[in-house]
Structures are given as C-alpha cells and as structure tokens.
Image (cartoon, rainbow, N blue to C red; front, side):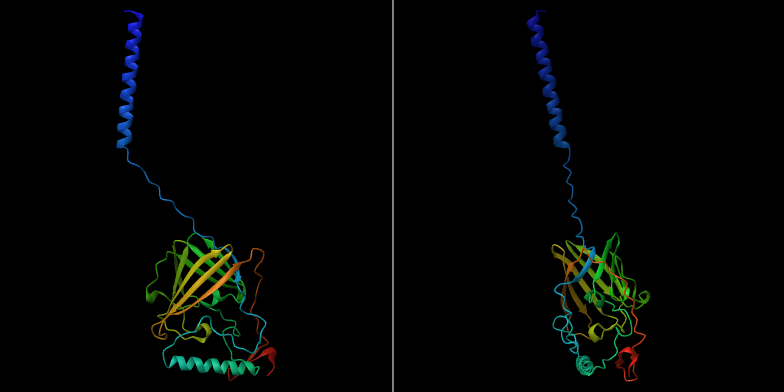
Length: 263
C-alpha cells in the first residue's frame, strides 16, 4: 500500500476512535446524576465571659427597690394585688434599713431565669451536646442540654434551674425550661409547675449577645411576661471564687434582716 494511503487510513482510525470516545463520555456525563452538597453553617460561638451591657446595677440609691425587667408581670388576681403589696412592703422596709429576707440573703441559687440576669458576670461554655452557664454569684451552675427530650412530668423533679433543652434555629439558640420549683420566685413573681421559660440567644454584633426571655404560666399570668437582656463579651475577665457567707447577718422573727449581727 502506498505510504500516503496508509497515513490517511491511520488518521481515519484515530478520528473514529476519538469520536466514539467523545460519544461514550458524553453519554456517561448525561447519565451520571449531579450530586448536590448541603452547606452546613457553623453554630454561632457564644462561649465566653459575659457581662450586662449597659450595666443596669449602678451605685444609685441603695434604698430604692430594683424593679423587674421590662414592663413587669401581668398577673391574674388576686396574685397581682398580692405581688404589688409585697413590693410596697419591701420598698418601705428597705428604706428603713431593715429589708425583708430574700433568696440572696439566704445564699440560695437564683434559679431560672434569674441566673441569666448577671448581677455579676456569667460564663457560657458551649460544648457538644451541652451548654453550661457558670455564674460568679454564689458559684452557680446551670446545664442546658442540646436537643434533649423533656422527661415525663412524674420524672421531672422540681429544681432551681429546671430542665433546659435547646435547639438551634439558624443563628438563634432557643432554650425551653420546665420544672422550676415554685419556691424560686424571680422578682417575687409567683408561678405554678406549668410555667415554661423560653429564651432566645442571638449574637447581635461582635462580642454582643441578646437574650429574649418569655415566662409563660397560664395559672398566674394573663399573658407571657417578656423582656430582653443584652451583654458584652469580656475576653480579659476571669471569674473568681464567690462564697456566699452571711453568717453575721440575722434573720429576725418578723422576716427582716439585720446586717452584721446587729438587732
């Protein structure tokens, strides 16, 4: 065979093979399903030491009773009148220098939601399956369990902080708490065992945190009691030991407190 004819034959074979390969590749590409990967957004990082911002507990008149956050609770009667009368009594005795005993003077935990008020700084530790809140005041510890199923009512003993379960909804951490014992009265507000506390945690800026709180109790409240707390992260602060020691204070028979052991 002539060399030119042989070259043309070889070139035709290569073109045919390449064409067949392209057909096979095109067919394979068309038959292979496209895989889509979901983009998993990282959870916001709320770990750190947090303090209220702006700080609401100034060095103002120490004889003035601190009001509850927001607009205060909208209680059913007769609880509304009873609560108002108690606040008036507290104010009068505080001004007289003989305040009524409360959980703080008894070194008792603040409970939920009081621990989050952060009279002193709080530390939030975010770990797999759990968020832990450590409060400087009285060295309190609160545990929030991620995606946890609530125990049945008979298996949920009342406690200071109750049972807290949390889920992430986008960049908002939603925490629901049940089982806060009735002796825990946030700003003297009474509640039943049906109370549910809902908190919504959200970073609102660099080192800025907001918690929207809702207390819902159909027995005592006409409507949910809602308020908001804001915080700033303090990278330099280390929470010290805080032992509650009121051994020199005296709780008098009438329920008032004498400080330093003086009657």
